[in-house]
Length: 538
Image 1 (cartoon, rainbow, N blue to C red):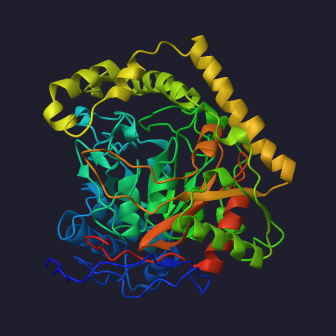
Image 2: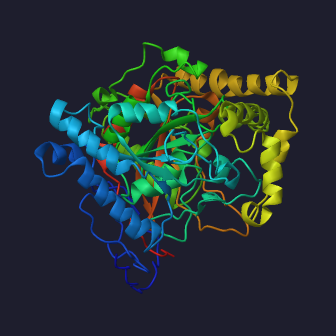
């Protein structure tokens, strides 16, 4: 593959904001900087699941030809060229799976809307195949899951092709206090395709960067607090963090069962809804899914309503706003929602939404030790390390590779914790649930009779800094994350050519309503723009 030539031009001199379809604070200048731009045209750029199905249905493409074109693009732009570095490993069986699915389509027809669609999954999601599952850690290179995760199995059952695995913030960013997001000992640093010197946020960084750069049709991320919605916002994507219990965590390397979940990351709300329907379901390995046994919709596409904002009541969580150009985009988004027929209640602030203090971290310290040790035990003889303690010791022995940029203070704090029966843990869990649910989201929605709460999802992206670690980028993920409630982020515009997202969150299992609102907003604004793989924007 030919490498991209550098185009040297002057950097942006002022902030440009855009909200799409003429709904703009200030129209984004078309002459954005092309410093080091190395993108090229791609046949499937911004292709939706529906577009790819149409191409296969018509005979123009096959699952094999589509996979080959995505694999070529990954080789050209992810592994070489601009080196986004989002894909940690490719599936050596992907083309064989694609050939089998092509035969099946010809003989019996497609299984459904994901038949032959190439997706990537985060490298903390088990697959029982020739790929590894490591959470980005060198300590896990020889791990051998005994079976597919529930998520991987559901994707295979739907006919999706797992093209490979994506890089992530190592251990889902639960290792060190001064970490740099999107870096792992195994995968190195993932870069933001909108500006390669900037951070895509994490921990589902590789999934976000790969989808936005059109290295796959869609991807799966995981979230404990912000790890789907934040990288989706900073990479101009739609991300859905489902209600705890809608998607099984069986076979996913954990942080904490109170907040962990997997969810879709795509370029459109429709694709995210389609992918969510494929993932949802009961799994005996995850007790939380008992709540939706026989109840969850399998077709979230039915909730895609372009007029879905009409008559809706939307509350604004002002506590998550910061002064600056990104917040002006959210203000413009609120204006557009009102033009689309929604009633916007501004503000609806409740102190409980931001009053968790140290309780959330306390819960996660306890659960990380307990849940990770249980996961490692589930690997049986295939576990290269058998406890959090052994992982800490491995990192110390290999500090030149694993502790290169930051330490493992978070792991050390977790290792100090006792069993989940301790009063400190039980009190922290009770506090988190009370503040996030009873006195938080549920209380605010009941008081104002809301359909959803909105707030900035995060962005624009900060520059990657291995010396000082991450800088704050804003965001509003914690209330829904701590409550275990759903959160959907949608592109809201650009600042300096960098994406900003808006989040819709609400009560438990309100995904149908949130998808309806998010889709209506997306269709009214159409803010998504593909990245140009610039070396820098400023």
